[in-house]
Length: 541
Image 1: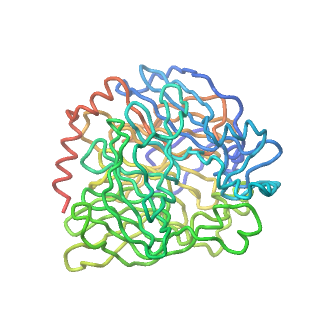
Image 2 (image 1 turned 60 degrees about the vertical axis):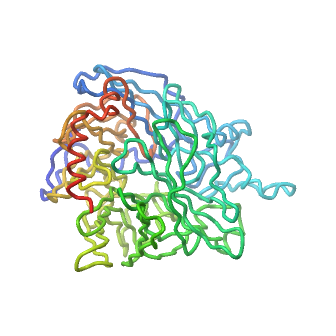
Image 3 (image 1 turned 90 degrees about the horizontal axis):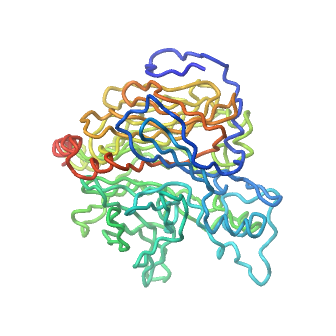
């Protein structure tokens, strides 16, 4: 099938190849087969400067021992590695050997644990002598995201727990051995974001947050902000700031600039309604509306009061970028008019697989990619303005940018789009959006379902979009996946490496450079750093 690059947003949709029938869509929720040993494929057009591994994971086993998960997000994790160097791509795929997965394997069926939505049929109640078996079960199914840590990686989900991950063997070796504790005398850590953010202007200082539950009546809920250094493999975290909160909040992601942490306060973890008493604990029972505006924490003066900006209520999952300009803070964020973690096509497998339900847009308000400006100075000081950046009626998510432009003014966002044909949820595309010029460039083929795009910058280049964009993509007509490499500038396809298997839904990927590429990026001599520093000086307050 012909695949399109450089399709301007104002051109009519071109339908080429097979018609959009959603063929093979169900494979995104179908369990994988055996692990795939390292298999290399010659890729003659792979740029010679690329040297490293792209790693992306996701749920890949959705049933065990006669029980099936109701939600895609409860599936047992599997990781996919794509090594790129010297004119070839080598693919490896293995199960994440987490305690969550190994305990179920030993039991022979889906075991205890807090799930998003339970199982079919429902698991029997916990034993009378162990009534809180779900709360005591291993919950380390961390297939959502990863960050580098020394010569290994940390794999993450929306929890304080971070797992050690070996980049060579792809094995999990247990919980990362922090030498400190997130718990405090009067507060207990509850969750964490799945997206620690690299502090702009640094190479290895990550900022992370943890919502804190008060365990005494004379104290209140708060969020703690801490940092850790990923280059040294440090086992100590540094407390940066704390901010009071109206309740125990939940964030999948948050924003960071050189001077501020930006927290859209919109979702809390509640006790759940009456229905939560009728079955074993489900996460979807506990996400509750708790809009309290956008809170801004000053990183340079942590004793300063938290600034609160009020605007129209929204919910969010992912953020593209946050940076400062002469009058305040700019945040490009995916907004949702409803709680995103809900019983719907994105999470509930039965609805994900039902074309009528997933395509139904009757009376729905669609998520939007928006640009918010929090005015810290000027005539509009203290107010919030925003504009929509996405195409009305389409859905976008999984935002990625050139990492060198994290926290500063930038132009290009790479993302996934659904309803690309304005009709079918499963009509997907990869979108490159220039937020400076307002143009959109698509990579699309009918009945093809790409994963999150990741931009890999060419070392030494000072052009923001000079590099490649990579992602796994499921060809529904063929019933198997490929590894796609696009030119970051033109969006033309450089390679589509057939994998011979299908890869189900995947979450967030990360590129780990090796060899000369890693040396260039870590040495500080990369010319792209000069551009970044110049841009940083020009736009930061």
